[in-house]
Length: 518
Image 1 (tube, rainbow, N blue to C red):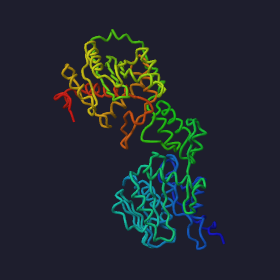
Image 2: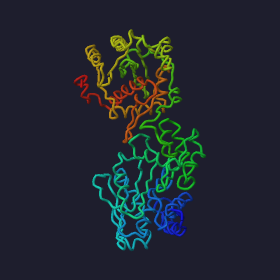
Image 3: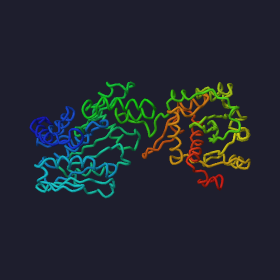
Image 4: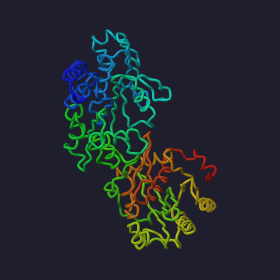
């Protein structure tokens, strides 16, 4: 006899139980739960395949689909079957996620289903974060993310929600290893795509699920469900249909068309659309940031002589040996927005070799006057200082923002002695996120004028934005393929201009005490 066989009666029993539940939200609220074909297949396979003793084959179900495809409803229905109809006494069911509120989402859906089913509600004790089924001494409980207090659980069923958001793997390990004492436990993990990086439990499980699905990994206890589309035509209905198994039902063409229109405006938005709606894993917490066509649309013919004596804010991004040193001058306009000018420096002795090895036309830019060469094989800060003072005589530099952690602090002190108001500017998310988002808004709205210099255009084309879990962003030198010093200098200048625009002049400790040396 084969180790596994399909028991139609068990599959039918699970399907019938779940089909009697009622929808809890949206236009279908109160109506019987109508399973879509892909959901019926999961229920049928998970509960129909058994061994010679009638015990379930699968121990782990990995469901990875884009947003709005009904995975929460499906997971809630499965957990309710485990709680009420799985012929288990003393069954412990848990729902867990990266935080307690997220963990409660599946539970809330299940509780609403129970409350609409008198046959279940009349035999249940329903609490804010627990459901008890006294007849069989079963219970469902919402767990917080504090895995250190969860050891010793006797897990018959678990729903682990949005695995991609988990910061570590301890909660995952606690729940999956807590199933050892049960006859036929089931862990259901539901998630959308996240960040592809080592140490991320969701990424590790995604790769494992792909291996099982392809046959490269043999695991008869693991049931992978993976829907995604990773093609170039991400904004076409055929891509949406392939990645979204509930396309035309819980996720509509109209909804995705609207989302795609918004996503076309920005590479970062495109990346988010592909992750959330096509289930494409991101390579890191960053995405290609600025749209080159939007940047080119901001180009104007500018006569800089007309700006003599005008007020501006400056950002100076200093370099070591190989990087460019960049100065951005940002002139506020009366009609709103800014006019921006960039100046770059590069060591003369390395420019031609760098142009050859990096395959970037530094030598051409230098010949055209967009790149200023300094003597030697590293940037000459004396030349930078002299040029900055030249611009300070030509324009009225209100503040000069400088990276607070850099080996050029001697230059900063000299510029202060020269009479410039030098302000220390952090390179972390706290300082950079606000002006980074404002820069993106200005570019999208056509509110930042520039002369189209090729060095900055190159930086715009290759700049990526790094993000943190709170949604803060900043240009990432570490992740960008090319030098983006001009963009960093612009963000620093914009950060100081924004502070003054909000009436924040004088509120910074740096304005009172000068540059803070750490």
